Image 1 (cartoon, rainbow over the protein chains, first blue to last red):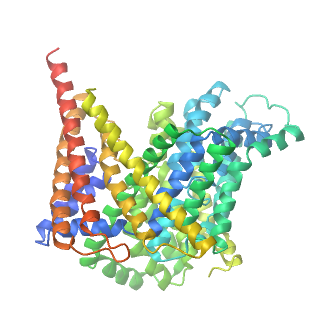
Image 2 (image 1 turned 180 degrees about the vertical axis):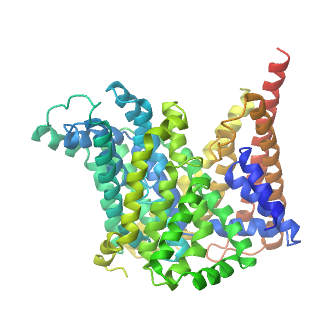
Length: 425
Length: 160
């Protein structure tokens, strides 16, 4: 890419042109500039979309939206409340545990932030927590969403490196729970003094009732994992099974879904997926242009010549991705960077599942770092306190997540043990 | 909003929902046929994929209508309202340009390779490649609607 095209890209991004359109524009100009055939832009976009495994992305989004629409969010919160509601800083703990449970239904942090933020930000404010803190906590906890399976970025990563989706899903379980624990501890010590008097512990009968009401959402991740791991279905089909499960649950068990709601949810889920899929398709064009310029090749030669130590490489990748994650949307960054970074990791003897977990965790933390922090936008859309106010509250939580990232980077077993036990790799 | 645009929005949204229904239905029916009856449909995977592709291109245009696309707000949050309006106008024009690029490139693809038949369903690829120019046309319509609305707002502010 010439200096002109890079300048054009930065310019159009700054004035607020959507990222996917900016990429298409710049790649289109770049293709014309090189005198390549017109149709290549469309063809590369098309091949970026035309894949069966990618279909797991819209289907998992659909399953999550259907679940959310059928009112399971309230049931999840009730369940979390029964277990941790009595702790000091109870509501904070409830919101974190709800995020962990919700993560098993939805594969996207943005969906979690918006579903839980709408409920928790006002409630936390009523209990005396600052609205800025509530927004920060919800945004930080939403990062767990795409780490615990199902996970859209894990699917995308698996597609790029031809790794097993099931292995990557399993790899995220422990790091996801670690994130929850880290946030719980930090939130406890941050707001312990200003939190209201704890309420009494829930009675066993209440806990059982909450479990019964919450059984539908809790079973969803179990079904997804069991069907994929059992080799019964492909991840895409598992996602379709999840949609079916959500449909049956919402229509016949909870009876909260109606036909008009279904049309709306199908349309809104497709809209949401198309935004993600189009970013991926456009990143596929960039990827192809970079490959024709042999950028990945030259970069790999350079790195392999300079860095021989896998740990040093992981450190460098983490630093690079943290910077990139601040500026670029995570999935687009993955589609462009992973084909460059992953082969070097394999060359240095890093376990691909470990590498995938580090990359995905890192880029998902990028969802709460400005200026390009999608979760921050979502919670600010609800709390309306401005990004700087949220940033002032979020940094201890951000540090906690970075500590988890460091742990996951340094202890490969945290991510590789579960997949290995299940017979992958 | 005039009746025409209400109908148009309803129809395009319904179509988008339909692509999702098609994709889901074909995959789930095929999974059931394969697992329980050992008679999978050969064309299922392909048709589901094409539903997704049409859905994505439709969704891109409708997403622009809804303001659902991901953009960087670092600068747009900081500038005064007048500058922001100017930015928005430039963006709409740039989106028109993007639509033109997609139209041209997608049209070339469809006319060059459209006569090929899809391997397992036998559908002419032109019907699938056509999603790109069609999506581009819808995107251009949405950009024009935004442009008209924003310019209208500007005119009202200048001459109340």
